[in-house]
Every structure is written in structure tokens, then in C-alpha cells.
Length: 231
Ligand SMILES: CSCCC(=O)C(=O)COP(=O)(O)O
Ligand SMILES: [Mg+2]
Image 1 (tube, rainbow, N blue to C red):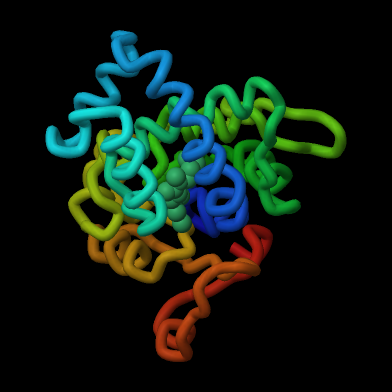
Image 2: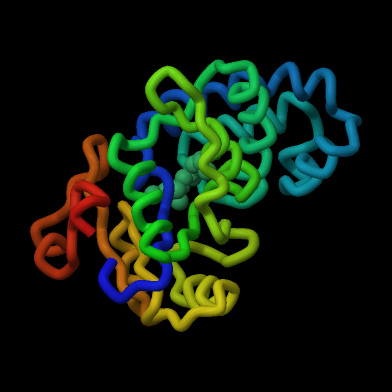
């Protein structure tokens, strides 16, 4: 983090386990959806979310359910699915069905970076709404803690663009009022490391338990860490 004015962080596979997203959040959304489709089909807030889906997939509640299940199974990171998921996850957090399991060193390290004067920002395929929910409900010991005050910027594919494209990182640097070279990006995805570097950021690959294996070639050509404390 030497010399960086801002640490930009991915979420899934970087600060929290992929299993939390795939085994807790995704199934919760799929299970919650039928009731929402039944009761809120004409609710203006839900209508806005469903109208963002392609017309052929929102002709009926069952068509939309099938489409959401298909996109979720294929882990398609498209904004209209991510916005719907955030909406569906809200209840799960507020009823205590789950809390956010950050990797153990993450919260103390974020606090340390803030104390050192760095800005912190998030860039995830999950919607900004979902990112804030996740940070509002962090599990720490027996309590749930709100860590949103640590974060200075929230970016997703709607306000920044796709994570594999250098232009998205240029846009984020501009929004943060920083040069790309002043930003350090941490992610579990090698394509995202490459895109951030193409935009002039420094980028480090984070290799966590449960992540896709890092090839020998990638391990040689990029900086890889298994904890934020090693950054
Ligand atoms: C914002 S929490 C939900 C995570 C999610 O839906 C997702 O797609 C995570 O992708 P990331 O870019 O954080 O790896
Ligand atoms: Mg990730």
C-alpha cells in the first residue's frame, strides 16, 4: 500500500469468501423471489427492478423466476440481476438470516489504512445497494457492526462499467479525484488485475481459500497475496 492514496477493493473472493455469496446470498434470493413475485408484482419499487429485465423474460412471474434462476446458476454479473438480488437480500440481513463473514484480518486492516490517511473504495459486480448492505451487517465476534463509515466510494457495473475493462478503472479514478497511479486495486480476478493495470492502477491478486486456483503463469506475472496484511 506504500504510496497509494486509495485502496480499491473487490468484495467476493477478496474480502469475503465466495462461499458466502454462492451458498448463502444466491440461494436466499432464489428462495425469497416467489413470494416477492406474488405479492409485489405491481409494487412500483419492484416494477422498476423487473422492467429492467429483457421483455421476453418478464412476461409472467414464472418466466422471471426461471430467468433469474438461470442467470444465478451461470453467475451472470449483469446489472439488472444484481439490482434485484440486492433488493431481495435486504430482508435476509434485517431479519438476521445471515451476517457478513469478512476474512478475519479485513476489518482491522481497513481501519489501519484509514488511520494512515488512505481513502478506501469498493468496486464489485454486486450493486452499490448490495455492497452497502454487506458492509452494514459485518459479523464481528457476537455482534453485527456497520463498517460503511470506512468507505469513501462505492462502484459497481452501473456507475463505473464492466470490471474487465480498463475504461471502468479510469472512470473510478476520475470519480475519486485521483490519478490512476495513486490507486491500489485488490481483487481475486486476474482479468480485473490486468484491466486495472491497463488503466494505470497498481493491482494485486488476492488468493483466498475457495477461490479459483491461480495458474503458475499468473503467479509469476503478478503480485499475489493471501491476506490484506501482506499488501
Ligand atoms: C455486493 S455483495 C454480492 C456479491 C455479488 O453479487 C458479486 O457478484 C460479487 O462480485 P465481485 O465483483 O465482488 O467479485
Ligand atoms: Mg471478486
